[in-house]
Image 1 (cartoon, rainbow, N blue to C red):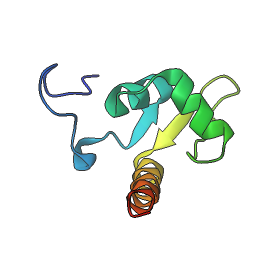
Image 2 (image 1 turned 120 degrees about the horizontal axis):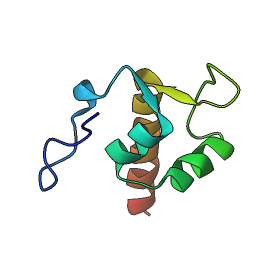
Image 3 (image 1 turned 180 degrees about the vertical axis):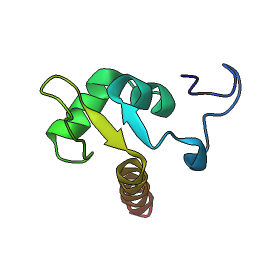
Amino acid sequence: MKTTKDKDESPLEIEEFPAVMTKRMLAEILRVSIGTIDNWMAKGLLRAFRPTRRSVRFLRKDVIRFLKEWTDYYDGMAGR
């Protein structure tokens, strides 16, 4: 699964995100570590579901919601 158009190009557009993503795929798309994804899940910031006991998946709609909330939060912080 290619998560960026090219190593030196910009990341995927939201419309290009897969409908369902693994933790590794999401970390690559957002350019963060898997530990960061784990932290966001533990804090309840990023919604995930478990199709099996050992696997975690993320829906595109939940990732988009998370990114919007995260952006709104930081935009508010910058105005202080």
